[in-house]
Amino acid sequence: MTDPAPSRRRARAAVFAAARADKATIITRYEAAEPLTRIAATYGVSRTWLRRRLHEWNALPPPLHAIAQARHRPPAHVFRGRRTTTRTPTEVRAARTTLLTNRHHVITRYTNGESLARLAREYRVNPAWLADKLDDWNIPRRTTRTTRTTNDRTP
Image (cartoon, rainbow, N blue to C red; front, side, top):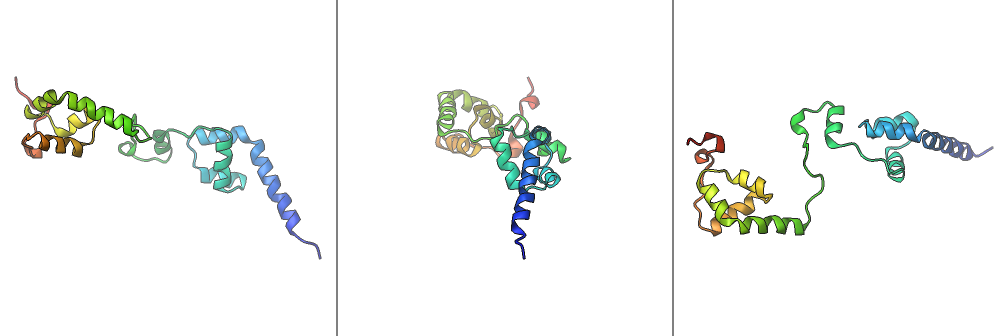
């Protein structure tokens, strides 16, 4: 009786070789935001094997909004223009320092009705951190109902 394992190994090696030979097509499909599971199923390889090959081939992952569009997700779930990596502690400290150096301007804008969230977005700091700073500076906090937006101001 013969061992069937060598024939299975040859068959798997042939599958892997066929996938490697079609490298350009695989990269094109991946960059077009086609799911890895679908590409792997086409070639008869595992998703993990395919992900490792794409990494070896330096294939760039598709942008998040392309993935959302390819999977028919609503645009509200797409975070266009936002960073996908977290900021370094140095970048966070720099943003906080900028806000602290403009303390008088921030207090004036907040007391004139600008929202805490808008100020936090503009200075790229955490809204909770900014709220703590306003408390430290003894600035009375408003509720959401009393906040006026820039567009609501009358001259």
